[in-house]
Length: 150
Image 1 (cartoon, one colour):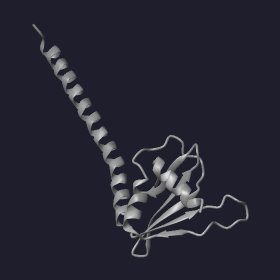
Image 2 (cartoon, rainbow, N blue to C red):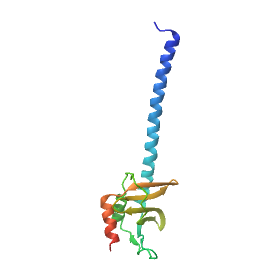
Image 3 (cartoon, rainbow, N blue to C red):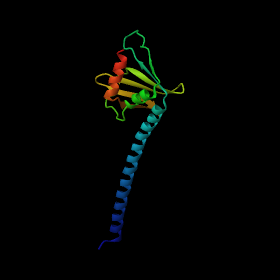
Image 4 (cartoon, one colour):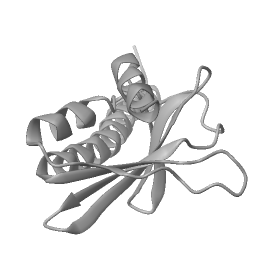
């Protein structure tokens, strides 16, 4: 037969395991919430944009950047927005080839810098005072390269 102190010890162990499981679950839920919030806000900004200005950077010293491309067709804006995936790239130190400037009612809502070289293909933007990185889809890289070659 178990003594009172042994029963109390078993109850405390069960309580500790239950609390540990709850804590792990709460932390997982919080982490998921933070990552989905950024994606939620990003998607909201992109969906409300009525113009995207694509500015490619000149990598030539003492050379001006090429003329920016203004896109105001909603279906094209949505297509460009779709090129930014939910995936986070593993490599994020490649510099940038240009910027996507999303505007709504003539006000810039978000600048997303992008890189589209063979080893790095991602977009970077600041949200909630933090730099966020997302992979560019292969279709998006192809689209941006074609625009840049004209």
